[in-house]
Image (cartoon, rainbow, N blue to C red; front, side, top):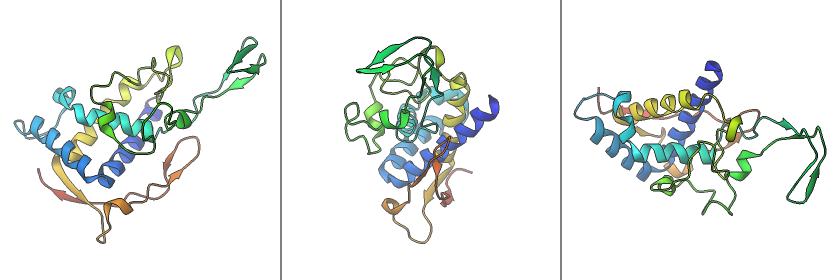
Length: 202
């Protein structure tokens, strides 16, 4: 569980940084928030992470647009049932396509766009009761590592935004950053994210 949790957490940090760098206004707003909260201390730790409302919305939007696990673990039907007019026989294995749900225009306005503000003052959460947002699964089958994963996403992102400014190499424009996905059991970036850190807070 720890191995799976750390691997997926680092993947979300990578996708989060990719989206932040591709969207400079998002990066600027996130840096302002992180630096406002932690400037008094001079370093980032877990004690004030609860104050990073905008960063949390970035993480939620990253998990929506780039769920690392596109299909939930298949479940076998114990009894015959019907879902949306489809007959599901006993012992049929059913998998939920999370990736498709999280990009469905019926539930998400501008579903293909990265808009962290959609989660500000929005009660939708990934705790397993909002079925349009099931990045970690739902109900009794929710990912057991959710409480381990979140701090391991929030803390590194906050540190990267607090201590550094970021730019792309070779005068590449932010909007030209390649966001191609590589599909498998998990969804990763097809190409490495190459960025230049500029130290702001030693």
